[in-house]
Amino acid sequence: MQATISVPKIKFTSYQISVIILLALTQFTVVLDFMIMSPLGDMLMKSMSLTPSRFGFVVSAYAFSAGISGLLTAGFADMFDRKKLLMLFYIGFILGTLFCGVSVNYPMLVAARIITGIFGGVIGSISMAIVADIFILQQRGRVMGFMQMGFGFSQVLGIPISLYLANVWDWKAPFIMIVGLATIIWLLIMYMLKPVTKHLDIKNDRNAFNHLWHTIKQRHYRIGFFATALLSLGGFMMMPWGSAFAVNNLNVSPEQLPLLFMVGGVSTLFIMPIVGKLSDKIDKNVLFAIASIWMILVVLIYTNLTPVPLWIIMIFNVAMMIGIMSRMVPSMALVTALPEMHDRGAFMSINSSLQQIAGGIAAGVGGLIVVQKNKFSPLENYNILGIVISVISIVGIYAVYRVSKTVKAREIAKPDKT
Image (cartoon, rainbow, N blue to C red; front, side):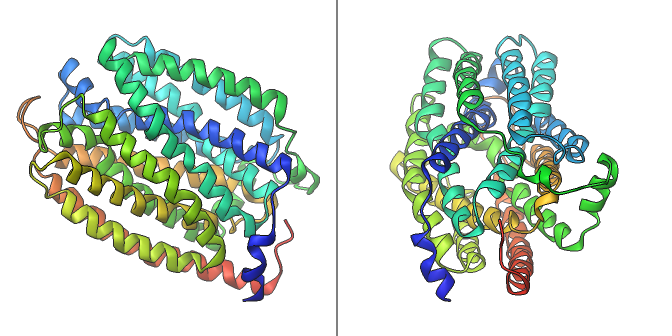
């Protein structure tokens, strides 16, 4: 108990702060590239005459390619400087996003999302491995909180600006904007981030495929994989249809969408640092369980809403963001504590891959559940998604409890030496 009381006194160095900023900016662009598909969903479905199932496949294409890419690179993730890996995959992400911005038809868009997923889907796992190498466990809750602010900034600034550009020009404009911003961030990483090679000092005689198999077969690692996959299932199943539901079911106008997403993002910026600090002070498993119950209640109500004033919709969006992000911070902090240093790159890659693959499955299933008779009619069966997500969230509470139990047992057996 004394250790948890002293945690807030562990301060970040100036270099650690710069690393947090760089990773948060990177996260901002990658998250925005993915998150923008939901706000642009209604516009894309109308402009290309896409059914919910076809749009769901666009989302799934990114997720599946990201998952497969992560698995293929997992065995090599601990054999190179993590900075070099980050720069390599980030430049690939930039090129894939550029392809999205020049797509002129549905097949090109699907291909572009696959390319973007191959590179973008691995960036998160590399970033998590860097965090685990540079920050001790008692700092990671705050680090995760600040990094997740990239999600908030994508809603406060990225999505409103992107929607504005899309309304002025067309849906391609946001992707071009992301390319320009990501190029600047890539240059900052090249000049500011030091090589991350501490894991290379640990002798590892396994080849890439043996290293991958060694990581997968660890029982306590698989518990973390399962928990992460459950978190992804719920988010991907509901998120792609957010703007279509707001426009077609709740009568939110396209001009109001930027404000709706911005309000949710502003709330995220306030709540994330608070959640990060709470995650380092109290039991992460308890915080996750409370946030999960909160999210279940909000989701069940929101997915059954009929047209109501915009301010009510905003309140529910803020409440939903609080629940979603308050689950993510403590759960990711716990999961990053599972792998040994020499397995972290492979673990994070596999973890990210399963997260993406589970998300791809969820988006595909969601596209089959949700029905829209024509591109201007309300979405049907959206409330069924809320029920499915709630059940998955309940199972997720148990899964994260198992992760927490494993981490605590390891902390008792030997102190964290990272």
